[in-house]
Image (tube, rainbow, N blue to C red; front, side, top):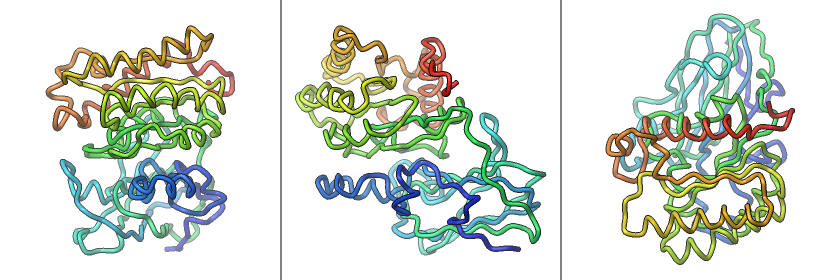
Length: 336
């Protein structure tokens, strides 16, 4: 087989903003991480990142070199520290392989070989917890290697939020951000940070500067108090709007929440939305997090009354998809 490094011109790394310039598998700007050291751990996790290419190779082998692999609460160790390969174009790409090691606790590499049946797009989701150090692809000798098929939606979705956004507690990488990108065939950036995305104004500026088709933000769970949420939520939105005055913004309170603070928190997020509308913002949308699972019993949609399981993430994605389609949020011709 022929060895190909991920830096090959026909291979794309998606889901890491600025990767073409920095060549770093990191999700946040260095300056922001220096200012908020609590983001350092999330920064090293390439959540939502993907390796993409197109090939007719009958066999494909992918090898990741990783570090910092460790267990995570309520998640399979093999999922949290493994990559996932899919074959075919969105929205119906099919599962191909779990890229892992049976000695994952000790191994500094994960790998898998899988079959391919013709010229197909290959999408490989990075592992959730480890730091990715290097990636190699092996194709049959003489096989073609081409750039992946361009996404139908020209500009990426951008997500910012809690451990829910960071796809915590799922059994596959198909959490709601990646599901939405699959439904619409879009690239996406996942800036979720478990426990640590708390409405930082510097991140609002950074996210505002990214060209995007939709911005989705939910960090309610990370706000340590109602007061913190009130002091940061609308301020974050206004800071974001100072750098991006027109992109669609979808904001939501936390899902399946039944704590004594629920009404206050929902009201804070709704107030940000209502004030934006009063000020003439016609491209902002609000979802009460308690509706994200639809009519399905919330008790079977989470692992711990907080973090959605795979069913919960699917229902969130379908609720957001419905809003996007009904409101024609992707109304720019280049994003249809």
